[in-house]
Image (tube, rainbow, N blue to C red; front, side):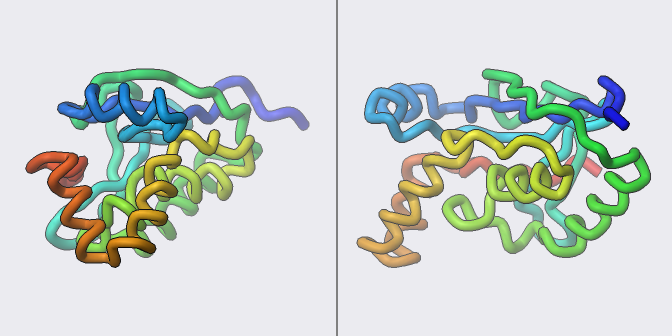
Amino acid sequence: GIPPSFAEVALNVYELHGTSALNSLTRVAGLGGAYHVGVEVYWLEWSFGWCEEGTGVYMVHPQTSQLGTFHERVSLGCTPCQPQEVLNILEELRMRWQGPDYNLLRMNCAHFSVEFVKLLRVSHAPEWVNSLASVGDAIVSSLGDSGAQKAADEAMGPARGRAPPPM
C-alpha cells in the first residue's frame, strides 16, 4: 500500500557558517553552494561528519544542526521502509561511513545523504545539493588531491564543515 505521511523523507539543508560570501558567488555562477545536509526520516535527522575514530554517522533533531544556518527543507516523498528497516540501513551505513574517512570533496555529508536517500527508495536528492563537490572533482583533476584539499581547507576556514558526531 501507500506509505503513511509520517514516513516522509526530506533533506534539511544548512548554509555552513562563514560561507555566505562563497555561496553568493557560487550560486551566481550556477555552481550551487557549500552546504551541510541531513536526511530527515521518522522524526530524526541523520548526517555524516568527521570524527577521530568510529562512525561519522550521527543524529540530531530535525533542523537543529549546529554546523550552519538552516536554509531549506526539500521533501523527497515517503519511504516504503518501515522504521526497523531504516534502522537496519543506518546500521550498515554506520559501519561503512567512518569519521576519519571524511573528505570535503570526496566523502562528505552530501555524498552520505545521496546514498541514504537511494536506500530509502524515494526521489533522488537534487543535484545542486552536492554540486560544489562536483566542482571539487574538477579542481582535483587540475590541482591534484593535496592541492585541491589545501584550497578547500583555505576556502572553508578552520572548521572545514567538520564536526564530531554528538553521541
